[in-house]
Length: 135
Image 1 (cartoon, rainbow, N blue to C red):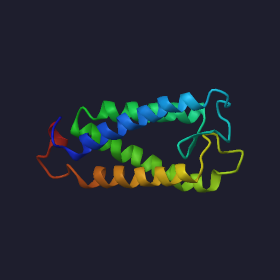
Image 2: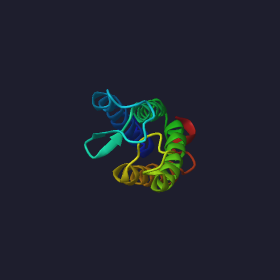
Image 3: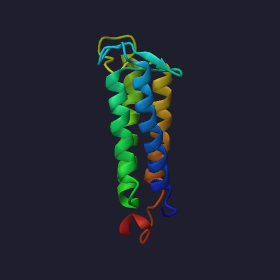
């Protein structure tokens, strides 16, 4: 793997989100697919739909980590989505619209992930001739 910050971040976050998605299924056996309240995985609430989202995000990041340009694009895209989920999630907790069983810890994690993904995606690998254009 090249020394691209975008590729490294996508690979690490991809692996972590895949593991979290798989681990989530260990604690959600009795939880409804899109239940508004899930079971706790550490301090985060998850339901099966939330687990599938984590698996999809992890797979997208891992696949994108194969090239700098792809990693940068996916880091920015997922970072933007997580920023939206983090902000909207603040209003969803405790409502019937909370179909991925978000809690306060989830919102903090989504906002932190957004800051890291967007920060690296927008700031790294941007100069002409960098790996973003060639890999």
